[in-house]
Length: 142
Image (cartoon, rainbow, N blue to C red):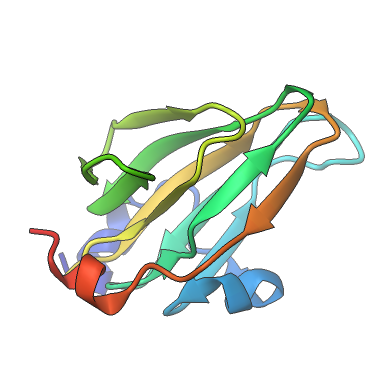
């Protein structure tokens, strides 16, 4: 899917370059916040990944509650939990990520990808960013 086709399916829009978190991504990502944290506890944002872009391995920590939900909107991508095979993501895929689970997600190599990331409210929540997904491991995905 080229960028023009992708944009017609990316319901919530690309948003601005995700510069705040760029150090935790291989490739470029964009963020369009959908909720206002000063108005509600729940953060939801549309994250758009250019082809081949993925975030580092990371863990959403929480002492109670927490975790993340991904609602896949457009394009194709990947999700992987540590020690498990990667899962292909397509529009309509829903991924529930419990707290304390090491994982990564991002676009497939040849297409743009977008998902709404919902941060599940909890106590003492924080994201621990870890190592990059190696090019070798990423390129082995089909």
